View 1 (tube, helix red, strand yellow):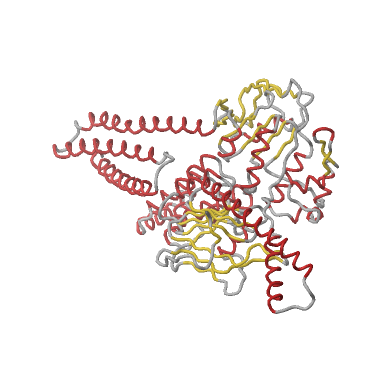
View 2 (spheres, rainbow, N blue to C red):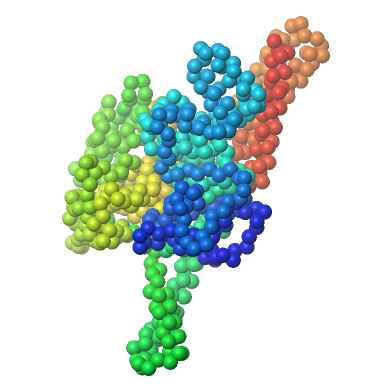
Length: 637
């Protein structure tokens, strides 16, 4: 059972990294949260969940110090001397910086040295500066750190270090900010939607990285697999109060349901008492005694508790879509390329009634281009796309709402699409009523679209797509900026949706719940038509990667044995010949062990202790390997 966090939580001062006491935040008359108390200890991995507009991003900013908190005797305290890193939802970089400047913008001497070295590599003709940069790296013994930096940049696909940050997309900026944060190696990470704009490979790599036991984590995320695999505590911000649940996402669902059930029972009791007290108030005599006045005061307290709303405030989606005919959508050997970049091969497919297809693949391999071809926004180079006469597309793009130059009130924005939407049995639902079902009150409907939060704009955009009453939904990353509660409702709607659904998403939970058929964009113009769920596909890929690593691990053994046949005829002493043979054997064994350790990190059920143990062993193996390879080179030369 979760507990509303109070000042009386036990303190473990020696391990405490963050303490919040009596923190309040209001905007005008709206109070987002009041007297919030929170403690995060070293090594904990904490996720914050709340409905959009409840104040979770604001609470993150208050904790990170980018926005002031309020409240009498309010206090935010971090443990002294710990390094803190904050990833905002929409990071900004200094004007005039390129990627190299931004990612290595630090006062740390080691990071400065790596920046100098990377800059020298970009201009190798300046041999004097390159030599100076190499010497500085040697002085600081920064090569191990530099290899970790290279891994982070490689995994997040940050390759063009001279690109101006002003030319980066929102997703590229988010990845750049994440890379900069991880390179600085803070002990306490505050992350606002870290998986937004990451593809599935990046997310799985980040999962392994954040599992490190020495990292303390406080984050907002809607990625439920990510939450389940990393977090040991989940906080819920609900109607201004903070509730704590131990365990992962599945534990949260069970314990939250129990909390709401208990609150409903308590509210029912309170409302019965309230009715009784209300009758007394109505017949109360004018002359009041001290006891009567005290009872009156208690009545208003009971009235306040009895009027508490326990509804889940979930959006309601009951739009069925227009009827689809027999012919839906056919792709007849379509292909698409831009110069030498092949995106879509000669792809042939016919969609069936009620089909739900997931599309996965790395960023930049052609997924969005493929969607544009489905809707006719982009023509294929060869082949053709044939759409049935009854097909009505609803296309939810990553870009979201495009108002152009004209800002509009919410209600006008929706009415421009349709005044109402038809329901079953001849009923109609007006634009205003549909907005209410998407949690926009009549008063809020008069607000201009430009004034909405990111999550509210996404919710309104989803409504604008459904207002067209489509029967073929195309959704490009629909989970970005949607809260977990809204996601659950959207998933239930899509499961019951009678038309076709094509969805591009990095949300593995959503893909597994909705799709049992995938188009896997493998790059280089290759699309794999895979029958099965995403996690089944991923398990197969992990096994293939494991087999490939084993083959690669044994390759150096074969190579060094072949090379030794030549070298033993050289002018080495017998002792050196024996040492060379021993080194070749040891290098082969270390390569095999290195591959085995990399394979272990692909397992999803590793404990924190295992991760720590394997990380230390891998570091030792790599150090031994480097030392022996250097000696092998000396002898071979």
